[in-house]
Amino acid sequence: MNTFKLLYILLKYSISSTKRYLSLFLLIIKYKPKSILEIGVYRGIRSAEMISVAKIFNKNLSFYGFDLFKKLTKKRKNYELSKFPLSQNEINLKLSKLSNNTNLFSGNTKKTLKKFLKKKVKVDFVFIDGGHHINTIMNDWKYSLKISNKKTIFIFDDYYTNNMSLIKKYGCNKLISSLNKKKFEIKILPFTD
Image (tube, rainbow, N blue to C red; front, side, top):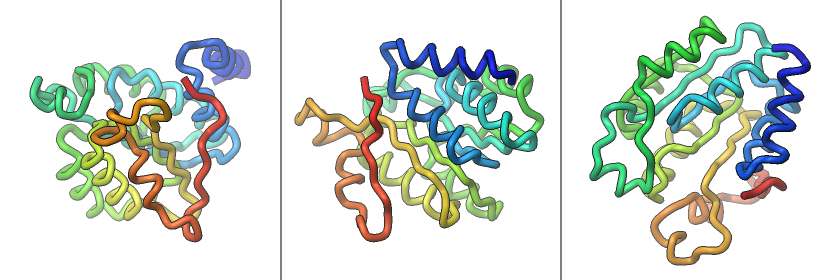
């Protein structure tokens, strides 16, 4: 990725309605991860951009993406307050053009993340934006924590600030407020939408 494309991504998100992703890329630039785990690949747009930005600093970047892909049912979609993603094959075609080391996992993260633990992989950067139900986010955190190292950066999407009825069932607010502030450095990122 050249400097022009990096500047394009940063500019794109600085003026977009999804400004929160600007924080994501600035953190990748700051911490230069060698491995990224994304929960909730959806259409692979952020996946491709994260890979492109991170590869500026680490050519041998490892990317691990988790989603239900075609296994997402209408009932599960409603439970998770989610959207239907592209297929695993469509995402794989998109990401394999950017890196030889992309790994996609299809299925419920209650099973796929648990199975991934057996690989004994440790990741540097985790972006959790899969299912939005509190129980799902708690599960994703529990397993992500087990595959992290002491310097792993965790980014949670779906932190809600103005809808108390939504917060009761969805989002990461409950999880964030339950974390031990002596053990974890917690920051609300500056760019929101």
